[in-house]
Length: 373
Image (cartoon, rainbow, N blue to C red; front, side, top):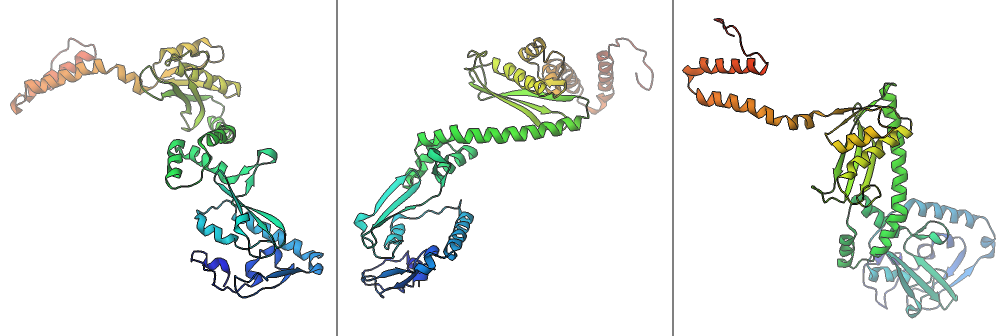
C-alpha cells in the first residue's frame, strides 16, 4: 500500500509501510533507479543507486514528456487541502527517498499558492514544490490561481471585500485586495475588451447582412446607475430594431470631459459617441428611434455625421404624454356609467356614448335616425 493512500490517518513513529519504489517515486525516476529499502520508517538506511545505462538512454526522456502531458491535462483543477494533511507528503526526499529533517523545511505563501522547499542531508539537494503552475512569461509570471480568483470574481460580479471576508473566515490564503484589483485592471479588463470587440464585430456583420443594403433602423436609450440628477455613471445601448441585437454600447462617467459633472449630459454624449462609431465603421443608419430627450435630439441634429439620420419617437414615450388627453375620454365614459347604472337607462347611456364618439371625431351636428345616429 503506498504511503499517501493513508494520508488522512494519524501516522505514528512505529508504523510500517510497504516502501515499493514504484509507488514512492515520481514517474520520471521509476526507470532510472534501483532501490534497497528497509521495512520501517525508523530505518535511515534507505539508499538509491542510479543506473548509468538507463540515465544515458532515451527512454527516460520519453517518459518525462508523457508525464508533462498528463500534468497539463489535469492543470486548471484545484483542491482545498488542510496544511496538516499536506505536510505528510513531505516526509521523504523527492530525489533520493530518504527521510527529511523537518527543521530544514521552508514553507512560503504567495497569495493563494504554497511553496515548500525541502533540504535533504543524505543527497545534499534542495527541492522546491509549488502548489500551482505559473502562467505568463518573464517577470510577469504569477501563480495561476492568483489570477483566476480575481478574474472569476470580476466576471461573476462578486464584490472583492466580501470575497476577502469569505477567505478570512475560512482561513484560506487569497491574494490581497490591492493585488486582485491590479490583476482585474491590467489583465481582466484588457482580455474582456478584446473578447467584447470580437463579438461586437461579428454582431455588426450579421446586422448589416440582414438589412440587405436598406440601412439600419436602430433604437437607442441610456440607463443610469441611480435615478434623478445625482447619478455618476450611464450606459447607452444601441439595438437593431430588426434583429433585436445590440450593436453598440458606451459607458460614461460624469467626470469625463464634455460632461463636466452634469449627469443629464451623459445620455446625449453617449448616444452621439455610439452613432458616430457606427458611422465611422461604414454601418449605414437610416432611422433612429428614441425617447423624447431633447438634449439627445439636439446633439445628433447638430453633428455633421448624424444630422442625416431620420429621428422617430417610440410609442411608449409618445403615449406617456397623451395620458392627460385620454383621461378626459375615460372620465366621460365613467360619468355615463355612473349616471345611468340601471338596466332600463341603458338606451339613454348608449346615446351619450355615441354622441361622445361623434364629438371626438369633430362632428358636432348630425341627423338622428331610428336605428341609431
